[in-house]
Image 1 (cartoon, rainbow, N blue to C red):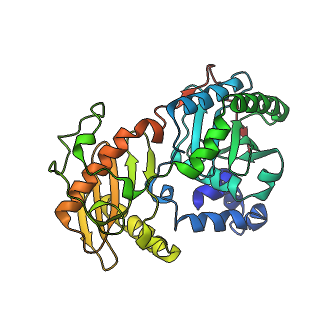
Image 2: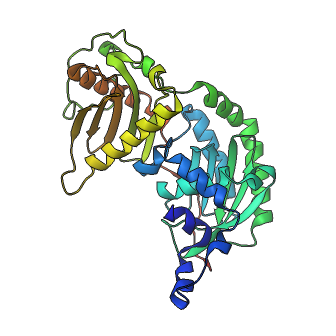
Image 3: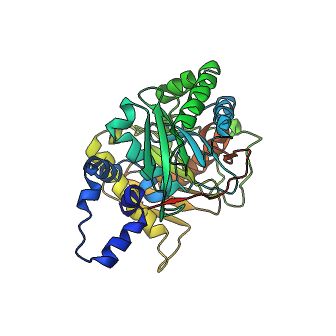
Length: 357
């Protein structure tokens, strides 16, 4: 919530309070109540709010590369970051050399854009602050929606860059259309989802090219099939975070937790177990297995990944551990589709030129 406020005002608003402790900043936030309500709602469905990571739209590697190539067409326009997104999921991310976009900046930026109707109805050029990049200064965001879900965001320090970025957007859009990227994005939006029912239980199907992780495996015994509703061994849902990439993936909700209230309850449980696993006073912990009235929660942290999984309350611990091994292997097998491996870099040297408040 604080980061969302800084995105709109920058941290320079502190100067107003230093000069006048009674300063009322409510007028400066006028019209943004829908933005904050949207963010509050995100805490009941978006893992990015506690994982400090972002998620990508699943796409074939060639399609994502085509999108990154299209974004490279802004090399001469003074852009610091270029993002192509579908709803809250990243399709492609390109940054200037030595410039890194933190996941905690992507969340409030996407929320700000998606919850503001004005961005959807016309090309927009708005001052925004990326608090994890520089909390004291504004950038300028050019935003254009290609369709109801897919939008381009170009971030620049130049306050006079609107028409240059408008031209860049037209060239990018032409490339995206010719390479069928936008068509593949819509297809992925409706087809490429992770279902716990699809978690492989046959270890013989394991990809030989997947990175080995036997030293971290919790259990290497074969899995047994399970007839319960959901995935094998009563798996209902999982969230997997790549520690190195700061990206996560999560499954669709299985039938037992399709109700919005049940989903919200599960996300609260995830938030609690995440905090417990990372508690500096008592941890950090490597694994936890907790049996609740509503479900069994299993969490597992290594140097490479974090896994949080919810099972049927009757789930067997041994079988649950085996299934979690399979989930991790499954994600590694699909990693080229699920993750962005290294941000593309704009082929020019960026020089800082901030427009301060």
